[in-house]
Image 1 (cartoon, helix red, strand yellow):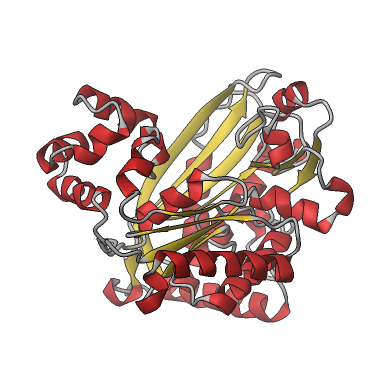
Image 2 (cartoon, rainbow, N blue to C red; image 1 turned 180 degrees about the horizontal axis):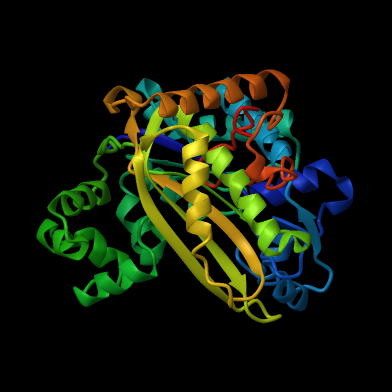
Length: 412
């Protein structure tokens, strides 16, 4: 079967960007954290830190125990987006990008003579050179080529850091069989347990499983057929998707871990989510808010969340009102708030939404549009509702693992 896809995965992207930016961090264990607080967790780690067992999700206190020499850097999201854009430019100099999968991953569709294994290898090597030249020596990547997008991603994960793996006949089955089941995107610990319940303990058994068995494992004939075909190297197109939610959450810095501070940041999250909703040209029919409350010094926590339906809307005043009412129902005996967030759901495109007939609702929409226009022209949060007073600079844009952070001033 021919090679059809090339997948580029930047290695330890956020930590590598910090090492590229600051030469004193090179060859040292580095972890990126969302905020400068001992109760937070690492969101990225350099390979020097990973060698000590530090990884994404490791609490700061635990990372210090594992690696006393570790350096913590508070995330600089604009710096990461700038580097992402350089990576995209570098890859495009060699081959046109088919899709940006995340801030540190891009996919390329191979055509014609590019599908030959030798040509794919040359293209991968050229991409590595282009990234080094444009982005810097610290910016390494692993590249995989395969007959479909999933297997190309699996190939990129096979050799890290700085690997280049070509999954082509006749080596494809042998190369896959030695992998653990959880090396396949979409097969996490829970799905691995389900596979084992159906007698699938190895990747060889996974690849040879009948379509009927895979359908039973996933509880879906569509998914079963998809996995059956993908594991055999077929190029199965992605199913079309529709935006389901818009949300924002934020870990509170120590000085805002109060009721008033948490409420102000929550209102900031609602403003951002509402502005994003309008930018996407969607309307929502429900809103939920949530918070994590710290229980002990070791980071034990309690989570609370609540939601409500709202008349189909896109304006900030209506969503702020609904979120405020939900926040008033929060428990008062859970300790200090640590994290807050909001999610807008039941989304429909504007073309499918029916605007309100009430003048008050239409005025609220016009006010929201005017806020967006002023903020786009004069700076983020120049105009906002009083509920987020004093929090204009709180909750800066965070790393988005599946999408590129949006620094549009209407949103931020």
